[in-house]
Image 1 (cartoon, rainbow, N blue to C red):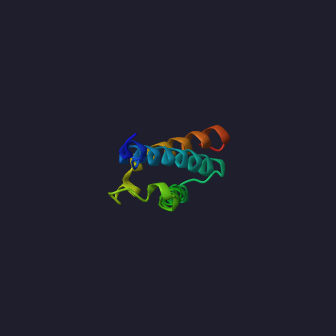
Image 2 (cartoon, helix red, strand yellow):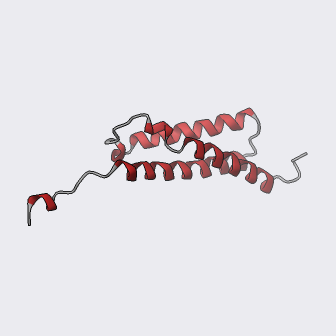
Length: 104
């Protein structure tokens, strides 16, 4: 066997970006359930959603497998729209399911 086939290549950035996206999706669901489960409404709820997004950023930066990403802007731009859309949807659904009488 040649030495080229025995070396493992570095993971492709597309695979890393996909993992980053799915980690953000998990954080969005957790953040939406947290915000809705605690019956947090209004500006404070939006603040919690942004805080959970920033927590996902810190989490991704702390993982060693994402250190090889060439474009550092991808840390906060990957999945940002999907995060907030999914977080907001889970937040609204969880509030409506858990507190139906509290909704005017």
